Length: 128
Image 1 (tube, rainbow, N blue to C red):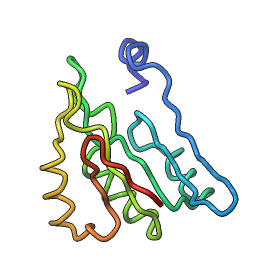
Image 2: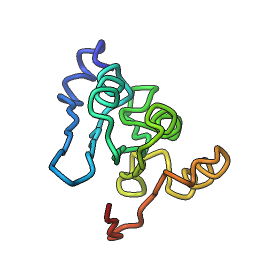
Image 3: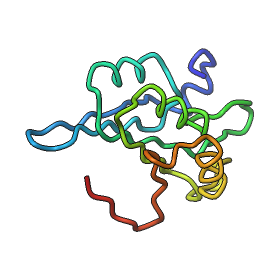
C-alpha cells in the first residue's frame, strides 16, 4: 500500500502500541495496519497475553486490497501467538468495512479458534 504514494498519503502513518505493567497482562494493540514484519517482530519480542486486531478488512476506493487486517490475519495471529487471547474489533462500525462480526464468528468456528478469539459486541467489557 505504501508503495503507492497517493494511497500512502491518504492512509497516513500506522503504529502499534504495547502496554506492560507489573502483575498485569501484556497487551498489544496492532492499530489500523495490515500484517507487516513489524507485527511479527512485536509478537516475538513482547509475547503479549492479549492482542487487539482491527480486523474489519476496511477498503478504500481505487485500491484492491484491505487497508487493515482481515479474518486471515486473525488466523495468522492465532498461530503466531499460541498463548494469547485475540480480540477482533473494528467491524460493523463504518461503511468501508468488508468483514462483519457475524462473518468473522463463522470463520473463527470453521477454523477452531473459539478458545482464544473474542469478538466483543459494542459496549461489551472484557477483563483480563
